Image 1 (cartoon, rainbow, N blue to C red):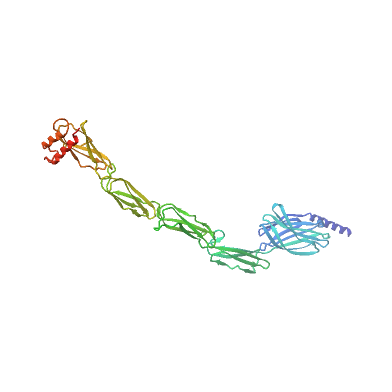
Image 2 (image 1 turned 45 degrees about the vertical axis):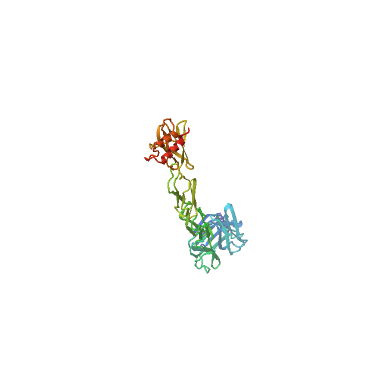
Length: 523
């Protein structure tokens, strides 16, 4: 019997040794998008419930290695960066003598970081059950999971256990805002506020506060809204502050500087804009606009925007600018001759024109010059309705209405009669003479070489066109001595010679012959 018992025990030990070296490596379980990998000896695995997200990790091992202790590693990959929440329960049986169990959560992270959180570490005997809650920070794409360590010195040398993980339902409260968004977090229309309340994994919401849909229909610099939702174990709140400005900003344009009494400007005009917004405040206001052109219907437009994105504009119109002086025209009643002289009264009439604002004053209307003079002038001034001024000077008006005066001188040594004229204003233009009623000749020298009785008509003209009345001079050489003297006069009077050419001898003829004697005699 002892031999048979020894043989059975040897077979059992051999079987145990063979089982002890059976290693589970790389076993995976996938459900609900979550995949767990299991590493360790014996039989180990993981199950995930698609509906609840609950996870069951289990292991079982029997062999002499339990005396040194065994470790199982259950791990998965984080799908988010943040904190995961589990309610855990750890149950099993590690035999009865000198038993031990350790449950540790771990998480890896960037830069090779590694953290462990011991959930349970202590002696266990027979069936055991432990529970708790876990808050484990994780990083998306990095591994996290659980380590199970067990040992005993019992003759049964087995280790069995299950870790049940129940994700805690986390409440999510997200505001849903509808309306026309503007700039800088503002809305430019009526705003609707509702809430998207959910749990993960799904769980019942037992209460809500402030979660009713509402509308913001008036402008506000910031109205806060808070929604709080609770499950049996957790609560969460969401908040949002609504800023509404649906009112465009104000903008007013003003012309810098006042127009004149006629409503005109005669220089460039600057239009300045003042902007205001009572709610979101002004973001931009139009720069001044400078109008440099001319016209009677000019306009400048400016635009304002507030921080919410509302835009408005203002136009200042009807601006009248005339920067061009009027034009003064001068019309002369007569035209000066080729020498620039008048010999009659002159009237200067003024008229004014302005193509834009129109003439406001123009004067004098006329000025008449009837006095003689060489440097006469008149000044006219004009203003248009915009206040532009113009001046027109008409100068150089020269009037000479007096004929020149002639004188004669006999040069007996040459036998010539010299004619000379004087004019105090325009000056002598020419002298003329005619012998015995013959052709008119221009010149100032008359050769006296004809015998007999003769008459000489002579006169002058100035540069203004004034002509003196012809004068008559008688000349007689009746005795043939080559000169006109008293003897020739006596003979002419005795013979009753007609000196005036009127066909009769009168005292005028006698006077002319006497003048001739005086003019020509004695030389």
